Each structure stands twice: as C-alpha cells, then as structure tokens.
Length: 208
Image (tube, rainbow, N blue to C red; front, side, top):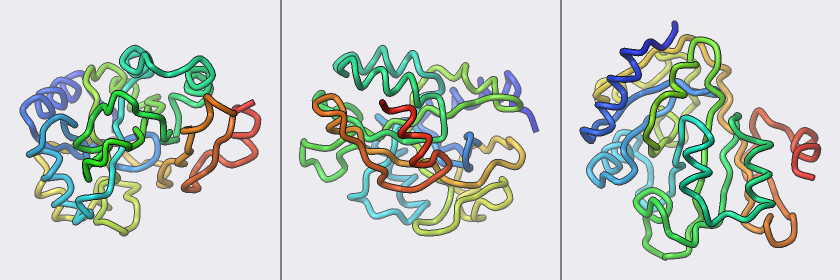
C-alpha cells in the first residue's frame, strides 16, 4: 500500500482538528496527534492505557523542520542528528526551552528531555515527508503490548477509537532504538535506552 497525496491532506486535517490517527512509520504503526492539544494527547494515552506520567515522543516527518525549531541544540548534537536521522531511532535530547510539555513533561517537573523521532519515509511511504506539522507519537499498541507490523495487528479498540487510519502495508515490526544524547554535547557520552533496529556497533561508527 502506498500513501497518496490525499492521505497526506487527510492526515494534516485530522491533526489540525485535534484528531488521533493510526499511521505507518519506518518501524511499526503508531498513534499520532497534535502535541499541543491536551484533549488529543489524553485520548492517545487513554486508548493505549498508557500511564499518564510517562512521556511520549515528538515526531517530525522530515529533519529540517526539527533542526529549525530546535535552534538551541549545540553543533555536536546537530551533527549527531544529521548522522542518525531520518532513521529508526528516537533521540532523547536536552529540552531547555521546555518544548511540547504535554508529551515531554506530563508530570510537570520542568526538567524533562525531548524524545525526537524522524522516520525514514521511503518507497510507499515517501509522500509522508510532506506532512508539515509535528505529532505526538507512540506505538499503536496497548501499553506493554506487541508492536504492530501491519494495520490489522493494531488492537481493534485503537482502530475503532482513531479518527483516521493510513495503511502503509507491512512494516519491519521492530520499535525504534532509543538513544540518550542528553550529555552528548558536553562530553560525547551516549547510551542505548531501548534496543531496536540500529545496533550498538552501527551507532559507534555514527556517533564519533
């Protein structure tokens, strides 16, 4: 299944209107919503039965808008983003501007990181690069459940609760590698928080 220009338009309208969408990524199917909409974010958490204090990722559909918005990132961190993104990773970054507090800091501590996701949308999913708004994004599963490789693998309650579903065919099925880059600018330190498609040896080559 290939994403069409009409799909892109429908997705942007859904997000702008405060809706919740099931979308394909370069790893698994995810739930997406406007990260500035408290109602939409709450719906995602409730659909997933996700603990309300657990942060979620913010996903951009291409890298340049993310780099433009996150102007506070230092040069070493920006080089890391250029090496790793787009790709099957979620990067935990310093968030001194406290951007996207509803998903990055749901407990209101004021000291949260930003989980940044920029998938590699290629082939049948390539047109998703044209989506112009960031989203709050989490795997389209029940909290703690298996990651959906196909649209029909998404739990029925999530499919019925979403306002829009995009079918991108069968996906790789392994959730993104989560990498903590909070200290990377200061001393080059990084660590894998969750194993995923991008392995330690590949990261060692990229994060030099």
